[in-house]
Length: 560
Image (tube, rainbow, N blue to C red):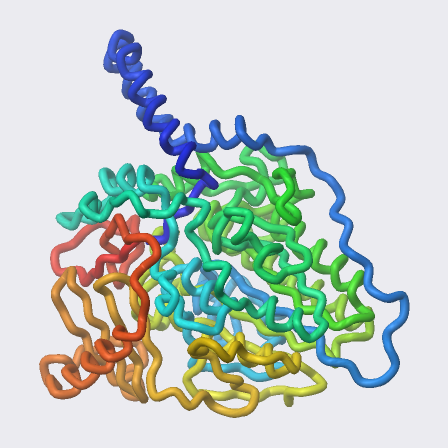
C-alpha cells in the first residue's frame, strides 16, 4: 500500500510518541471517554507538530526566471514537457472507450496527446506505487538497482497503520525485527544524490530545468528537486497534499471512511507548496488549477530558450476534492465519491488542454516534445470498481491494472500523428528518450536500463518488477508473478489473455521455472533496499477496499 508521509521527520515522530505517553496518565484519569477521544484524534498529531515547526504562510507570487527576450536564430533543440498524473486508472481516460462512471467523463485533451503523436499501447509503470516509479522516470534505472525499493514511511506510522489494517482474515504485518539503528531518517529516504537525474543530464547541454508538482523522492535539502538538477521547483515534497483547505467554500470533499490512509491525509496534510526549498505557503486556489497556471507562466518565461519541464500533477490521488464548478457539471453521476473523482479527472484534462494551448500561443508547439503518463494504476482504496478496466488489479499489485499505464508522446516536428505502437516499453524508457531528443549523454559509469524508444522498440528481453518478496517479469507475451503471501506463482499468456483471467502455472511448470530463473538472475544485480519495508498489507485483486470480504477472494500482500 502506498503510505503518504505527512511530511514528518524522525525527530517529529519521536515527539509524537513522547506526547502520547506523557498524555496517557491524564487521559486515564479523565476516564475511558477521554482516552478514546485522544485515540480518535491521534492521526492529527503529525500535522499539528509540522504546523508548529513550519507554519503554512499566505500565498505569494512565484517569480519564474525570465529567459531571453528574443529566440536565438536558427534551429534549436526541442522543449520537453513530461506530464505525470497521480494514480490515474487505465479506464479513467476516454481514449479506448472508457472514462469515469461508465464513460460519462470524457478526456478529450489527454486523448488528443495520443492522437496527435504516438500511443504506446503496451506501456508499463516501473513500479506499482508512485514513489519508486518516479525514481525510475528520473534516473532511467530500475529503482531497485540503487535501493529505492519501497515508498518511504516513518517507522512509527508504519507500526500504527499495521495495527488497524486488514481484510477479512488477512491482517497487516509489521516487521519490527527489521528496525535497526541504520535506518535513514525519514527526510533522507529518497533518490541518492549520487544518481544522475534526467534534469541533470539535459541541464548539462544547456536546458533550463523546471519542476512543478509532486516530488516524493526525498525531503532533505540534498534530495529536493533544486538539488537534483532542477533550476526551479514549485513542489509538494511529500506523497500528497490537500487540493484545497477542507473548509474552503469552493471545495467539494469525499472522505473514504474505510481507508486509514485517507483518515491520515485529512488529519495531517495541508494545502501547501514550497518554491526552491522555501518555507511552505498556500497555493492560489485548487492545486490542479494552480500547477497548470504556474506551468503556463513558466512556459511564457522560457519560450525563447530550450527548457525541460517535469509537470507532476497530484490528481487524482486522494484526498478526493473537486471544485464546486466541476462537481456541479456532473449531476448525472449519483454516487458522491465517483462524482468528485470524475470532476477531478475532468479538471485535470481541461487544464492539460490549457497547457497545450499555451504552447501554440507561444509559437513553440511544433518544437515541443510532450510526454504523458501516470505513475501507476488506479487505487483500490478509492472504492470504485472499474478504475483499471478491463484489467485486473490495482495500484500496489503487479497485475496489469496496477502497472499498465498510458504513455503518449506528442511532437509535431518529430513524431507523426495517429501512430500506435504495441512494443513493450514504459517509465524506464522516458529517461533515454528525453536525453536523445535533447542531445544529452547517458551516464557512462553505471548501468542505464532506459532505451530511446523514438528510435525504435526497446531491445531488452524482459521487464522486471520487485517489491520485497513480490516479484514479476514479462518476457515476450509471458508474464509471471511470484508472491510469498500467499505462496503462489501466477503465469499468464498476455497475447491470449491480456486481462490475466487464466493462470497457467499448473499447466506449464517448465515455463514457470524458466521465468523464475530470469527473476533470480536479475535480482543478483539489484541493491539492498536503503530502508526496509516495515509493513505489509493485503490487497484484493478484483474488488476495491470497501467491498465486503468473501471467502476465496484472490489477494496479494504489498509492502509499504
